Each structure stands twice: as structure tokens, then as C-alpha cells.
Length: 178
Image (tube, one colour):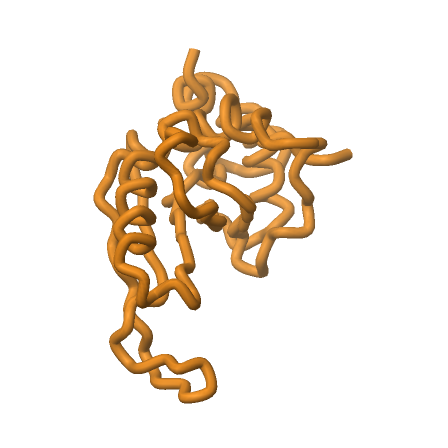
């Protein structure tokens, strides 16, 4: 059974009891998942940028957006409008599919994985997770990769409380360290 079906059938009711909420509608849910790749110094390398775009598209099943710089910073040799990152925002069914793949396949493939930390919640109830290499995703062919690319995953929830967001992620299978 998928995580989404589990959430709809039983996790939602369990969270309602655990968090002492008056209605099932008040139970925290996933709003969206944002996957981001910063390209930094490699922004002038066209093959690197195109490889980032194709890898992120393969990982998410959706075409990524290129994120331009908003300001110029002369010390970093950065001009306004230059591409500094690549991002994908997932909602709905694609979001649930990606989350299930992340929890069940990707995180267990990370070298020396002992769980994710509880400290990565922000004040808005969002969870941020960084991966040092994107090769842990099954869609990425290691033989065709010339550069190792880190990426950041942000899970945005409907709650503004990090404790409720933690309960949601824990109930849906996120492997936290004890």
C-alpha cells in the first residue's frame, strides 16, 4: 500500500488523536516538495547546467525551472540574471510518488545512513534535507555522470508548528535518528 493511501485511510485519524485536534481537516498535510540544485561556480559550464537539468528532470519526472540571480555581486563574479540554481516544485500525485521513493528507496541507499536529523525544521513547519550526491536516485545512471551534484529537498507542510510537522513526517515513514 502506498504512503498516500495509508495517510488517507489511517495515519490522518492517528495524527488527529495524537495532536489532540478537533477535526480531521486540521491534521497537517504535505503542501508541496521543492527539489533544488545550486550550480554555484559552474554556472558558466553549459554541459554541467544541461546535465543538472536532465538529471533533475529524470529524478522528478518534471521539467525543472532555471533560477536566475536577483542581484549582481562583483566579489562572486555574479551578474543579475545569471542562472544560479535549478528547481522543481512537486504537488499532488507526483509529490506523493517522490516522497515515497525518497523514504523507501533513496534514503536507505545513502552511504552510512543512520537516519535524518530532527534539527532541520524551520519556524514555518517545513523540513529541509540535503543530499551530497544525486547518484542515490535510481533514475541516475552513474556511468553517464561527469559531475557529482548535491541537492536540497524541502518538504512544505500545512502546519506552522515544527512539532506537528515532525509528527506528520514520522507517521509517513521519514527515518529520523533517535
